[in-house]
Amino acid sequence: MQRILVALPILAVIVLGGFFLWGLNPDRDPNAIPSALLSKPAPRFDLGPIAGVDSPGLKTEDLMAAGEPVLVNVFASWCVPCRAEHKVLTRLARDEDFPLYGINYKDRPEDARKWLEDLGNPYDRIGADESGRAGIEWGISGVPETFLVDPSGTVVWRFVGPIATEQSQDELRAALKAARGEAGS
Image 1: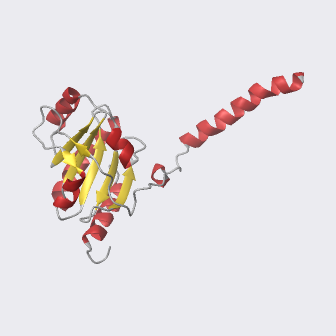
Image 2 (image 1 turned 90 degrees about the horizontal axis):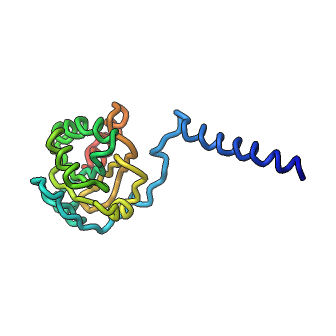
């Protein structure tokens, strides 16, 4: 009995250490997390604008109203990777010519407003998700997270983490091309 009592803490440390090492594995792809939304209609949501920001809110119907694929980016002012991704998304939306919509996730309006003033506002529409309810509906696992929605309102692509590397940008371009029905996609 005494041997079991001595072995239990050692076993617990080994198990916890294994989970810790798994989480730090550089070969682990966070995008491998499956999304229940892929190939399904975008969730129903209706978010008002961020107080003090000159941008309309965002709701499900806005995704189809554009008549073309739209990129929905979930971001927050407190998110460091979101800051790294911001310039890239701004450039891509301009160069690849797609509507960029934002969901400001669990942020204070004054912080979101300052962040957009400092970095610029590339979003055509931004919904304020102060409660995090829309994030739950979208099934996000954290921020930033980005979804491509086709003109019919179907989620056709999802990316977890910042779209900042060449590989992630190439993935977005390929998904955009496919959503537009362009050859070579």
